[in-house]
Image (cartoon, rainbow, N blue to C red; front, side, top):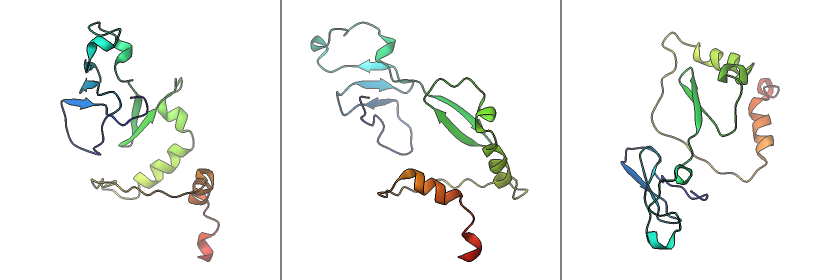
Length: 129
């Protein structure tokens, strides 16, 4: 909400979420259910869907979750194009498929994201490393 993280936890369950920016509270479906100091807000007491959290378009391919913020016209498989072949290649490496291990990894680095992405897909240097 207004650029603030409404959900600070990486995992878990909650019936409600409170925005640290305004203190607005949302239910687990993203609907606005609470406003502090309602008298100060001109729309208080009225049901305004535009005040609820924005729904995000999402799709699943091979158990990978893809989120899209824009107005996607094509299906996810069409949008992925040839990248779909690489996902299939990774997923088909084993008869048991991929094992999803809970948890996450987060790393921040001061760099141009395009350089990181380019180096991540550049296999030319691998035979020499």
